[in-house]
Image (cartoon, rainbow, N blue to C red):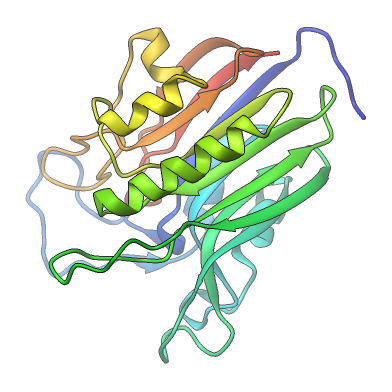
Length: 263
């Protein structure tokens, strides 16, 4: 297992919107054309990541063998395009002619380091309320062969508060069972002041909060974009946080966020 002293890591969390690109949308403060539609291509997201040069990337809204995105393993494909190893973590089965039989959707991890372990954890669905949108959510856990073993969790929490509560409860249980350096990242669908951050902040450090920076990450393309922060990178006490920032890009409807770390 690879061990290094004072190792520097660039970590990115990126909701790639299943490869839907908004690069042809107007720039900030320009008139918006409602007839515009995004196009499917991983190239813009890959180019954005190549500019960042991360060693570890957590990705959300990832297709697996779906018709709409070219029937590819999107995590592996994005890994190939960026020189990283990509692994997919299932959250749900996609249904309908746009997706095709056997297509999946979930999270992914890209890394320059070898994978030692991989687990997928479904988040329990709450009791349904017809007024709210629900979607099966999941957590991807990967252990990387670096610095004695770094455990990375990637998740995309729900739009419903009850979905997010269930997700945070499961994350806390998994974190309490994990030893050694930990990175948790993803689209949490909650603002920095949401009370559901509290149990996570009791266990890990919010890389943006500790530096006093909270750059907005969503949406990437609107008249006054972006206007809210819903994407996060948390780390265990093993890491020193050097910097945190968002990258201006319309390769997806989210901006990628970057934490520069030292271990």
